[in-house]
Length: 193
Image (tube, rainbow, N blue to C red; front, side, top):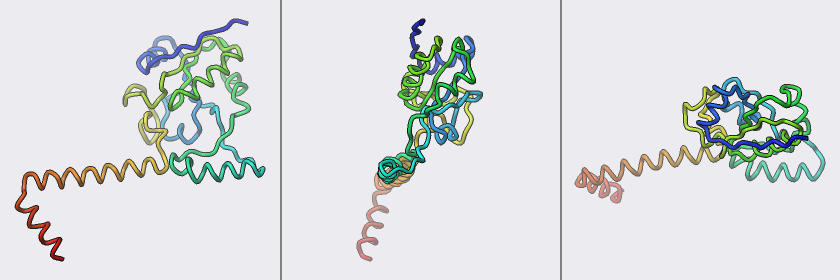
């Protein structure tokens, strides 16, 4: 068996692999991240799928996940996709040039390793994943930017609250800096009532 090296590239190099060397793009993220944003014309085969098993251990783990990391990060409770390699093989021959992508670079590296073991020889991954991609690098489809597709749940709510509070604090600071007499009168009115 011929052993191939997995190439780890940055986003600009990945863009050239697609445009010049005709690499096919394989997105291995879960369906929720994929639906939020993905590279146009990519193929989607998730490395992990939602775990809907109903044995007692899975129910306990799913409940804990959904109450903590699932709620905070907006991610479903998953398990390895048992059909991952077979699904990729049904769409690509082992000599196909594949750019494997995910959000942070971990799943794509694991997927690339599985595909390498299955005989694929031309595999590349984006170092640090799609979260490191600058807006406009790739033609993207979805409701958000590629680098933000992994953000969901309370993390996005927290980000919006932080943006609003930060704006309010900056406005208050600027008001007190440029209009100190008016700010003092407002404070006196507030403390009187």
